[in-house]
Image (cartoon, helix red, strand yellow):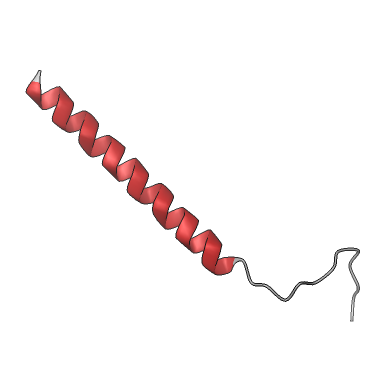
Length: 42
């Protein structure tokens, strides 16, 4: 077994990474929709 210099906490960050990516995608979608809506009202 290969040892690394970092300690293992046992936590899995994959769920947090997935939630962060989902929130980022939602924010981008809301921004695009708001810009389209604002451009349509001008």
